[in-house]
Length: 219
Ligand code: 5GP
Image 1 (cartoon, helix red, strand yellow):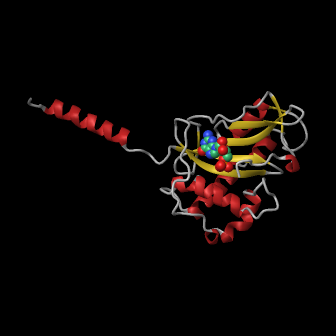
Image 2: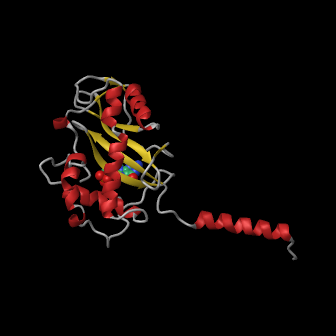
Image 3: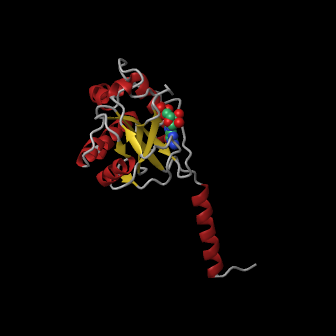
């Protein structure tokens, strides 16, 4: 069979498409996840795929090395504390987040870069300020309309968050985690390609007080 110019072009385009489809990406975007306490605190920065699945524990040769973040420790203790074990120094929790999630984005940062990227996203998101602008003070013991919380956060960064709730012993919904999506360079907030399947919230929610904040049971 003889191929003319058009034939070659079609074959070339088909090869390009197949190449694009078969080169697996490390991940597509991140979930940046925070939990409310007196301020919000970081839970993690999690590489995810657009289909809702996510990679984990991607490089067992790149274990957490606390010497790489020793000068960040005081800021991490404030912004990324371990709520499961408030008296703990956080090292176990940071190790878990780096090894489970951070190692799956080694193409864009090393261990130190992972923690710096999350700290910088927390500043950028400034959830406390976004809520305060809407007259919402977390931990004020009041109930808030879910729509108002979502709108306030959306106004802050430009994109809607996903909010996950817990149900307390009296059956009231409490904000548990706020998910925001971040591009694959871990720099800019983006529209979420897919929302996680966490426990949804009712129309009225409260913020937990620091002492009653639920623990991270996975640790
Ligand atoms: P971890 O503390 O292990 O980072 O996360 C705690 C829980 O959050 C996990 O057991 C899982 O239910 C959820 N989770 C963790 N990472 C991801 C993620 O990247 N995407 C989604 N959708 N859920 C996650």
